[in-house]
Amino acid sequence: MKIFTEDNKHRTLIAVSFLAGLILTAAAYETGMWFRDNYKFQNPFVPLIVPLEISPIVEEQKVISIPSTTPTPEVSPKKTSKMSKGDIVTRSLYPDFVQHIWLRESGRGSNAAGLAGYCAKKGMSNEFGFAVSVKHCFADFETSVRRLERWYEDNSALTDNQKLCRYNSGTASDSCAYLTLSFKDMN
Image 1 (cartoon, helix red, strand yellow):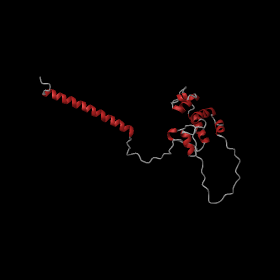
Image 2: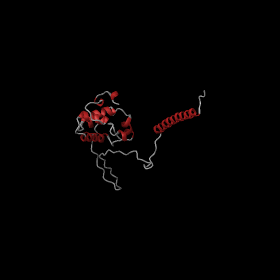
Image 3: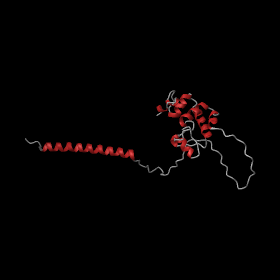
Image 4: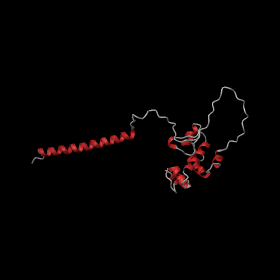
């Protein structure tokens, strides 16, 4: 009895070819997935140089005066008492809201890691985790409090809890981990 007839040889060759094709397809797919995860194709229509300090946040700009070449008489500086950060928050329009975010985002300025530390190294401020994705830094602490007040007003249709949840997660809900001190639940 002959096992390998001409017809059986043909079927065996087709089966082996089919299995080899499946194996090669799977290997090509896995290689493609690995390449996609480890490399990024550059779009030829996008400029290679992109400014890093772009921020979509509009805030009041301080007026910078250029010194003139003619001397001006010096006026005695007014005695201004610089307010502490705590006083700025307490005197803000929405102190409870601002205080809540300040505590959770930077431990009232005690946590120098993350965006707060990044901005501090640049001589700027952002102890509220505002616009983290673009690494936005404010000129000073008071400016960041004023911007947070404006954010509060822009979301005036929400309750206070919904505002806090939206500030943290982007979703306006009545209950979220951000409302409590359970930091491990905030993922």
